[in-house]
Length: 190
Image (cartoon, rainbow, N blue to C red):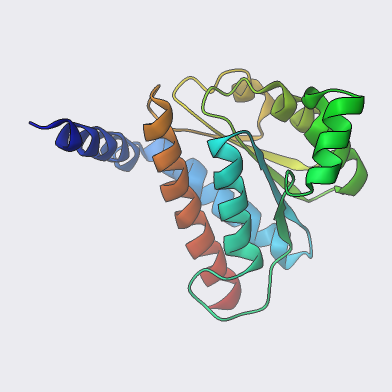
């Protein structure tokens, strides 16, 4: 088997494990319900991540604020890293570890949803954001790899992809994120 085929097979295998994991699918269904309810109540759904997970966070936020399948009104969703002036100022003046928690303190309100993507589940800036979110009664949803890392305890809901391989985890994060976006859009807009 070529290396290309091996990589494709590895990706399929992780997704098969997600498909066969009833508990994980139940959590995904719960997240769909929570996200739908938040939007219906006029709340925001915010995302955060680092590196490739930041790109995935921005991608998923855009599916809500732009569109997924339907031409419909925008939903209030954003990735927290998109303001580079803010990001570089806070990282420089304070610490990279607080870039997300300061925004949570400043713009989140009770009933909002914060989705953090971290393949290890140990990203300090996301853990700090989740702590700030808990203080404000913001619902936290962690997208991680197999163990969940420290986000396992910090998340109200944990979507831990059954893999320890970063690219395979991120591929599944997008799959699961797309499932959530599609079904939330269907719940709200029919």
